[in-house]
Length: 215
Image (cartoon, rainbow, N blue to C red; front, side, top):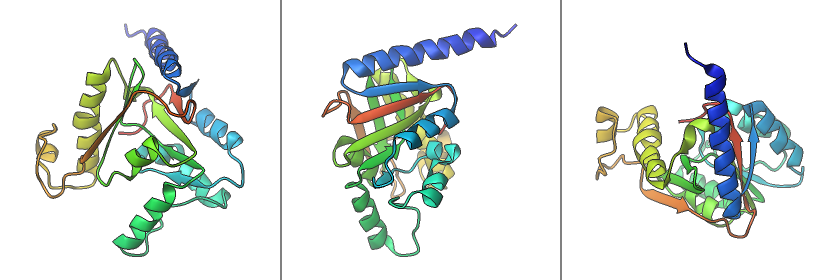
């Protein structure tokens, strides 16, 4: 018989251990049972005058956070409002780097306290590393990995492959389901970022959610 309660306890224990290690590395971290609780917490902390930028994220979309910002926040730097060319898109992404608050998810988080992310253009990994005054990451329990090697593997062979498939890219990983470190023009995993300590302390907040979310 499957013990759902025991499984939930294990998820919470893993999240608690990750938070302890992340705080030791100067990140801020909180845990929530549901995505709606995490979203409500974020909006309660957000000032009406703060500009908000964002990275591409299935998690943010699933939680309805982008829609809430579009319809209820005057300073949302919405990079999805692209009725123009690539140069304008780049301008909006650069503007996101100066946001007061930047929101995204993380491709993987190691329980020992590292954030691992892979980007195509690099706008998200750049914002996580430097630029916006505050960074808030919404992270489902499925993104937690036992160690750094596992987090890198998840970013490469789970998150990147799923996104390439979702976007209909012509890459070997779409055909095989695993990363080939390819030279395909459609390759989307061009920058790998590992953040092992937060500087300045508390700039990056991870909001863990005890649900499976995102890619």
